[in-house]
Image 1 (cartoon, helix red, strand yellow):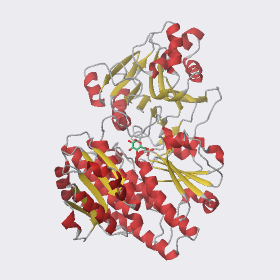
Image 2 (tube, helix red, strand yellow):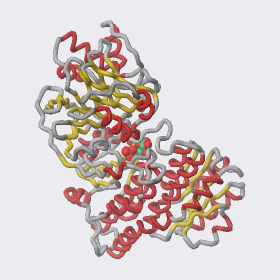
Image 3 (cartoon, rainbow, N blue to C red):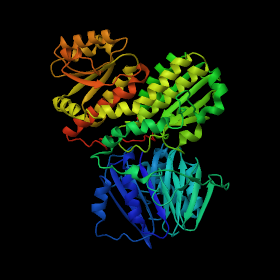
Image 4 (tube, rainbow, N blue to C red):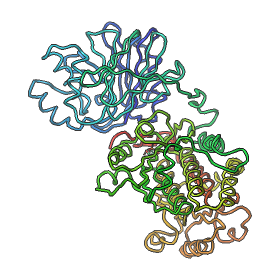
Length: 611
Ligand code: G6P
């Protein structure tokens, strides 16, 4: 996946593109490039980050009020100057930036080679730009038709912006499977993979749908589908606060986002919990209430951190709604032959709402008759548009590649859904329903209190920073938290870490435990506390270094553990919302001490829009 930004209007395109690319760097950051139209087309591109591109461009010609930029996350071909976008067609007629994958590129490339084409890069995108040019030159059609004809031959996913050298002042954009947002200004248009490069110029946006092609000039916007039918896009207004896009005084976006969790969890339940804490109201799923009332099974599909939130959801739904729940990796689900029927509730969870596997899984079950719900953070994303109903997490934009506040907001939504549904289906008594709601409203203050103990976490991080591996253990609803804690550590510090159900440790991972191994144990004073203490003893007996995450006030655990992180007392059902916060911080400080790039870890990208 990659980030695309493009501009046509009266301003200097370059500065808009560079700023936009910096905002989109979370989508990919192994190479960057721009193409600027100013009579001819100037292309600057290089391996590296946007700042490397800026260094390359310094002192060069940057005039032009039409242009497009790209930040890359390599799929076809390693990160290199040649593989960076924009790609130019062999005869220089077309320039393209592309997010997605052209799956049949080998076949198309062979055809083009037979027609005399040669290639400068290993990318699928260069095949596409040459295909467009070849059709344009051979069939003597205009650029728009050449693009449409080329796209009918393409199998795969694309968000594209194209410049044709002989049609000045014009951008052509197309989308299938990869997002593309259009910002509408006064005699100017912006195109981007998400709205962050656009919001400081306009709040009026349009979303391209699959297989739509737009022709954009400063004064016009024409939209058609691949079959030449005219489409009328709807303009919507977005609320995205520009202040949310900077680091707000923190050293990294990730640290800022960890700290934001008290307010992001509040934003998630704001307006959804009655003032007197007597009920929950989820407007986004109101229309499907009868389906929710009669559902026989819930299937939750997601990837990465969202999948861990789904596992927490499994505990919550089974406990309070008493419906069987299956949690599936979207990528596995879609390639099986899963059994889904009309009484099922399919719940897709995705921060970005653009994850290719999650979207594909949703599309796959569309004809099953099941009710499909989404939980997602990005308003107007593909997931929000392709599900029957859903609930936004309202966590605010998340820039750090390692997800933090999105996770706690997803759990907040899942908790609200489970409590509400349990209450309506009478599997959750009214008194317990109220107690849980009250517990949820206390979480933000408890997160704030916990964040005051950052010095302790820094000390533990210093003690663990040179470890080569780590183990995270939890039971019940805290097992997914152990998985998520381990994922955070791997993602940003490159220390190998595994999350395990505490009792399963003795069936394998215990073989790894020695005096160099930090073992982080989620040991809250809950019904399984004594059992978890036995697991801690097993680790200590092998000289492992125990970091216990324990309920505040538990003095006994200090005798056993090497380090203790205290968590305020809360309802067990809500404990993932608190216990994950110190684990996020621990990973963060370990990664910082190891000199890692916290916000942009190697090989990762925030939004995986390829399979
Ligand atoms: C990528 C990100 C993860 C994220 C996962 C799912 O792997 O690096 O942080 O959890 O995608 O993303 P989604 O947007 O669907 O939640």
